[in-house]
Image (tube, rainbow, N blue to C red):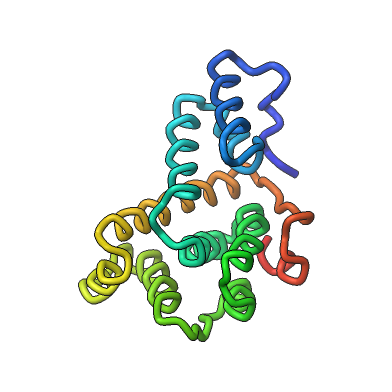
Length: 187
């Protein structure tokens, strides 16, 4: 049961309505996930949703690597909603199914691509140690460039915010968008 029943979408303040319209009218096309509870604080919701739109739709990160970082984060936080949306997007972006399945189980995937292995390792390193080692940072910079490293760090922070919000408000996973055989693993 979700905890954001106090957000009445039919009776939003003018500020809440402006943010809700910006979210639903933007590239996401709908108002769901963390965005409904964020409407409790429209001053936070608006800059957060704009940052998220940039990181999801305009980052320099290749879609496959971006989605890898997002599903790693969703799994790290056991955020079922985020997993249900992004596991499918990760597969569509070209991330191998066996890698997505391993991440769902909490296992380290056996990546064929060095770029995927680097991003997975960097995500794990950041969440476990709270920083990138000098070696990891140099490898990321060589792969992604300085802007890409900045955007990867921002993406990890943003999707942690999303995941924490989803968990705090118990936003349920979307069964209709989940990869069916993986949906029950991450809830």
